[in-house]
Length: 163
Image (cartoon, rainbow, N blue to C red; front, top):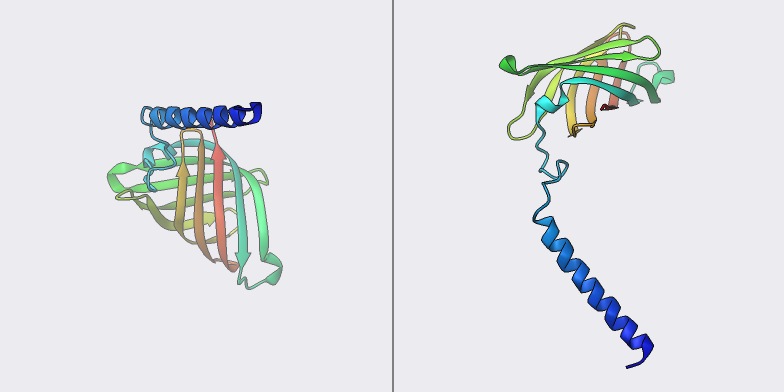
């Protein structure tokens, strides 16, 4: 056996051992919270988050309002499990305050819809499209229909982190 061929055998052997070790350890690791088939514990959302609100606006009455928008924000998420009601109060760095209020269902996956109202007169309805929630990160994608002073379709992501 040459040095090159023994190196290939050791590499293949090492790879086989590594794969076997990874397969065995995967059975003992706790489940990945992001790989639960879309199931999210709604109670994990409760509390304060800091992050960004990003939007892509389209079909606006005023074309200058279309396009991408974003701002840093703090979110306070409140839950009323008895009435399946969730509210998010957003305080943006630019002074804007918004409230997203609506009912949720967490069976079999988390769904949320309701109304939003902001201190600048922006208002509308929303439906949550997706949730990504861990103890330290959250991302909620919303389909928003503005129907106040401005009428637009908005694809928004409320994202945040916390300790």
